[in-house]
Length: 232
Length: 400
Image (tube, rainbow over all chains, first blue to last red; front, top):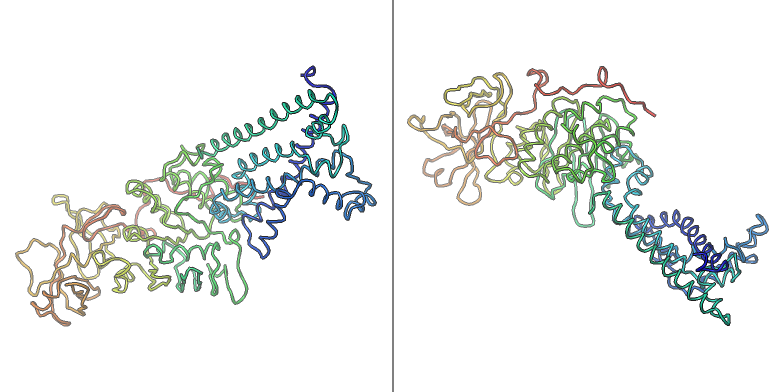
């Protein structure tokens, strides 16, 4: 493997995995909350709320990146306070790349969670409550475990999409080697170099393997949990 | 004492007007056809359905009162709920399901794990997953799970409806033990007259979202207004009897009721035990003179108190005995031919061959004898494992 990829390419691969992993981990808890709200609650303005959540899915990724820049950038609406009060700057950092990847893959996670909740019989929650469980208790001991297959396959799909994030990342945190240059950005750079074809091709191969791996893993995890629950 | 006075209107047009009081012990059946609102009533008691107005009180504690703004959350009501579809948690073992409510109960433990497992015969299932269980086994586990949450009241929503006749016969004895061995009031939803007769002591009859009658079983089920609920050919008289003799030679038993005795096929209960006889009105024929050379064994003398034209060629005739009314379904042609009218003395002939003793759940012709709720201490304890109460049984589990 070490002879297959150059150190520079390795850095990009490692960075991609790191960014995608943390983006997925951080986006899952809010995705579960929002997914639950969308699946189980009815309130005025739900349609608008649903639309806003799904906006990153349909907006051009460059627009998402630009919106992140003007809100979370060091001179952005929120970013300036982050910088002034806590000394946190997301610009040109891996953390910034993680935020970009998380925002873009968020709607996918929310959808996966929502489908998972819809698949859980609401009557089981009622049963749990007649047995003395509070709403929260019933959610964590009955609904959440039963949602697990959906959450897990949702998370893996979000991971795969975060691995491929390009537009929002390059617009928000630019293309800095070792900080924000993930596989897609590295491929983009390689195509601009006179002899970068081989590098682009190698990284493309890695991309395909990673994406395919995540999808297969999602399918396997789903199957295993369903068997454990006796659904198959 | 369970006091319910609620009303509720659904957007589908269904309305519920339930105002009745159920005794604080024994089984009270909510009896009616499917769609009549029986399940909605127990959902209101459990708290999973909120009525528009009214109140629900159990043993003096208010579960719901719209005028005082009280609506106790489901988990604070401490009611055990056995659902028609069992609703076991698929990701837990049978034991995990049973312990779920037990662990969360803050109430005094009067029902122990071992006792419930023994009573319901589910010890060999503890490690299994719900999807590997049969329908009857699932339902027994669901009953155990509800009991172990130490409920003050048990709600059962047609627990036998999704089972075939064999499984029903398998579960019913467990329900009888539950009723007899635990001092736990039970609201039991059912559309099966056999189940109701076998299990309950009180009945609330529900039609079109209204409780039309409520009281002791024999009172309620004999009322003519229940005809649409029970059905033309199942309507009849319920008699609370005592077994007084067995005649092994002919395979007959004698049961005594307020106005006499009936000879019925052998009843599997000891002499002195209470029994419940059901005489369907279509199995009662009338005679103006004392019937002598007829095969019918059971003949009771009485006076016609009322004749009502029924649909089709039929008429409902009420024959008053000293304390009881026997219903007879005859043709209007017979009424005219015999010149029957209120005040006419008649003999009611009840075909002995249609008096039967069989488990509920089987469709049975004619009258039948079923074991009614045992009066406290009226019979020796059964051979089956007694339900141990906590003191002297398993030590109480720690209460967090």
